[in-house]
Length: 304
Image (tube, rainbow, N blue to C red; front, side, top):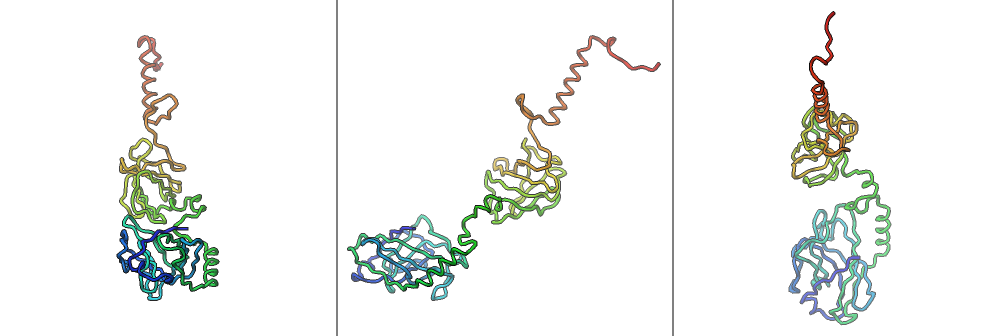
């Protein structure tokens, strides 16, 4: 449960003891309250308090249901909340906000049950009461709907989606040597070290590029950080790329069925590439020929 420590306003302190809190308002402002506030800076939504209790004399728990529309037809959908006001009638009793950032983003078509535990230790014990429109049936129904909703928290990832790599895998929709994939959710920027996978629609015949979600096309390089030649990516192959910001390119980690680009071997157990192996073979053959005693001892094939 989120515990807020709102600033009780000067107007709130002037209210008589026993004043009831009736509404909670939400706005898009972000500031450090001083206590002189009489309204929210950018109120966007107001709902009545629907649940509440006082567990200890200096703690109040207040709850409200946030739907898509309030009684004035206003909506929080798609808006970022940065301020919360607690009202006694039309008087702003306390306000919570912070200049350093916002609190949450309200998604459309999803009702939120919010509960706040308020620290009112600055007031005399039992000085504040809660005016509750107790809709126990409605709150119970909402909780049951929440439990049965297949995706009650769309901002969070399901374990199955993480296990299946659903967020970073897609199908290639590009053209020859120009691979393109639209991922969901949409990638909005290239981040150093991000890894994506996709199924290639065609094999590369030379240098290639990759474009995710319409961002700038960047070249694909192999394990040796050299441009692709051909055959590193095959049609239907599962491709894994990692973005290398220093190179300004996508490095090909693997493609099932494709040739693997490797740099020159540096140690005895390193893999060698074709060019390095050919050079080694040519050097060995040349050294063997040069090691023969003289031309007279070499073998010749002549016509008889």
